[in-house]
Image 1: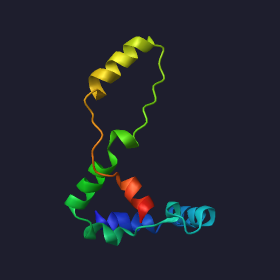
Image 2: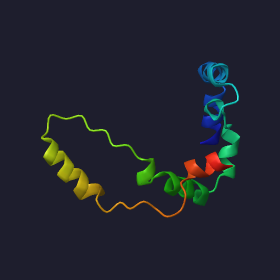
Image 3: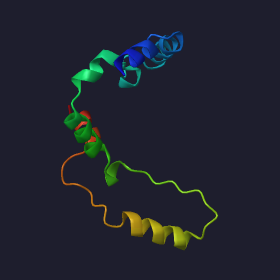
Length: 99
């Protein structure tokens, strides 16, 4: 998989996209680029920890576009998400702002 990722990141389209992001965002993290070679340095635990740190109700926004009755939508949302509790630990987004 790594050769495919490396090939893709060196394509003209990918290079132009990185240049565009750099021009638009400068030093902001939106312009960041992680080379494919770094993919092997990330552990499964790190990816899972990131996922759990970001998939939280205090980081979520629920958008529903429907012609369904609002009361039915609310009931479905409460049934599905009703027991989703906010963790006591700070979110990764909050931790990044503090550092």
